[in-house]
Image (cartoon, rainbow, N blue to C red; front, side, top):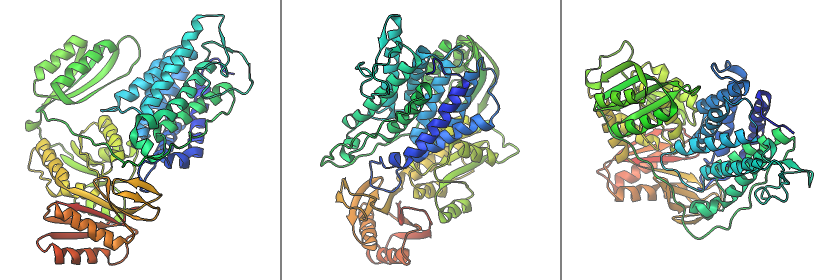
Length: 561
């Protein structure tokens, strides 16, 4: 049983966590609230941990870390960030980052140090989400951190011993093989087991906190993935394989499913960037002050020692106020100020668009519009590489999927170019945005017009139900045809062509002048022609464009403008 986590143990944890996620990949993928065939949290977490593991194998040792375990944690965290896929992948990368920040400089990662690291990881995870929601992976991370801190605090009584079977804080997980085996209070094993047990208990409570999970009869998929990671840590520390089974599904209620929505930000005239030598408490105040002055705020630092070097980037209207905030925080240097209206065209292209696309036909459409195309479900590393490869000073990213939006945001923060991420949720919205792009406009003005066009495009998709479920349109059975409008099920049918016609009528009943139809890989021959003929007969003043998209899962994607 380990008393501390050294570099070798952390490497075993990373490899063991990846192997465990691969074993549970299908199980976690199946924890999907909606009955559509794209629940891929397990896959995304596997890809995220794969990147973290590859960083340990292929990347050079992190410079500046005072300890070998610090080097390993830094590499894991950076690898996970660059390979993060989906919301859960990004959040897991932040948990690892917080763990690295809190423990890299300590000489020994014992029980109390692990507790501090888990708390820092939970706080970093919450900080990565604009609108945190309880009943998700965030709740699981917070519960694990709290239990770890309580277990570490028990070390203040040196005579205390703990038996995980009798300790009510740990009994939910029951992670011990030898009943009655005394474990030193506050030890690494007790803290790790406490965190793992509390995470499992918090995961079981997620349906009570998030009604969508209760209605679907599942627990949170990202939270389940975090439990697998913590179980793997317990195995490394104790040598005991004690992976918790999936909590039993809750009974489904007779209420419809719901989905969350997201929003954008404001615009400013000046870009201010400088290096800053300052202590972290002063930088926290700087972040708060600059957030009040502008947007596109990025503050990243080395994180070592009492005073680190930070790279500060922000868009503001009051340059003097931004620089004054820097002077108050520490010593700013290498200051650059750029007025967007005065920017000269660089040697490379001034602007570019990076679009995420699934399907050869859709990719060809975007390429014909001059966009750089990235395959669906990209990692942060892949999106960042595509942004960099454009060579442009200004880049617009169109993710075309809610799960890709946090990955795109992470890539934008890492990029040296000025990057704007438009929250497009469907390829038809991206086509609408590209149609109004005008290089003669100022970049930010062009981004606004593209965002307006994308937002004005109503989108829908047709697919086959992957399982029995209750939707806002009523109950569906596996194999039924589902028509979703902006993410919500509106129609349930048994005939694909008929459901597509009904969907078209419903969309155009709310108005519209231009319809875009993208047929998927599973679409029957003649579907597009039949829908075009239906529109001509019933909606003669509507212009219809049809394309072969070749995308998976959805026989038809529809856009109405």
